[in-house]
Image 1 (cartoon, rainbow, N blue to C red):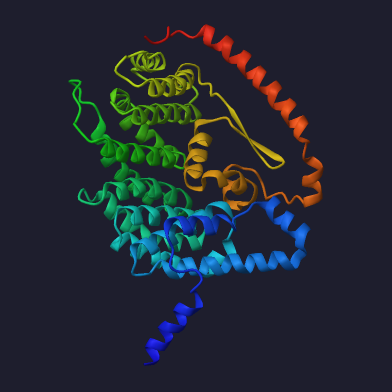
Image 2 (tube, rainbow, N blue to C red):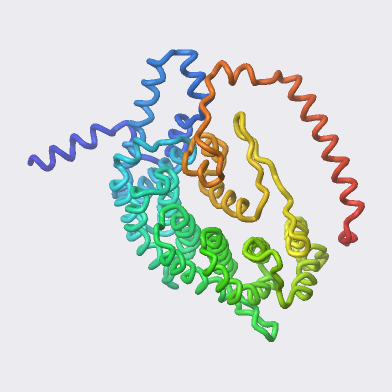
Length: 428
């Protein structure tokens, strides 16, 4: 009898949160996930008291999500995982999560072992966001130590759900990047990825293994995670990798999958960048042949490929070819709040793309407030800007309209000149 009463009380405590549908989980979390400016506006309108109430309400919903990850209903568990993912992607929750990290880890472990497809996929993504929230240290190491064997088992299991394996291939890479403390274990994880993406190598006779688009995506995810871990390898490891893999990676450029071709090209550019950092006089034996392949992809006009794929591929491979031939990188500026960050290397680009895949639209917020991510990109400690300063920095709608119009005009002119100089002659 006491046991049944306890269950009854527990349901009553979180009765307003259960049950969850996928839409409810996302909407309820999104309504409470805000940036610095949103929090400041709440404080302006209702003062500190209303901000505290909103924070308590938000934490109550998070507790409900955590409890619902062990629900009997797969739909409820899925909604709870999605709710936690959205919250972690859009807010900094270190103190709240730190106290409950092992509870959340147990829930992720249970969903990975007993869940199916989408549930496993959501659990794998949540594991990454948990490590991003905790940062590099003993807490994330404990989490990863628990989940790493499960990740590797799913990744190596050819009978496991393909979507789960795709998600695990990406999550294992970023979790290793954040939480792995032993460089030898990093190398062992890279070998797990190598066992997958090397299956997509085109054979020397020009033939390739027939595979489904989903399997090709799994190999692409494995290659991108492998490339991410390249950025934290030691000099001796990099030398071995250059000798072993750089001569073979160009075989992936002949893949039928545009995502695999692009991932392979970016990985080759990354390896050239790292090799030149080790030795400014680095030379590649098959340099001419590689440049010919890259140039062909940068000017690809094959009719059997989709126009969108060709356009995307040509844009990326022009940058890749520039790196391989001249050692240059097409830099990009990311603005967030009052700050800006320049993506000026393939190392930075691979790291930025990896984090953005998980936090999505919350990337700018994490660049502002997440100490670990700021440390990765060498941005220093977070800058605290009060609401008055934020208001003073805002420009009027009319000024913003004029600025956007001028920027659009300049961009159009620049692109017109660039199109005139391109080598490819269009499509028929």
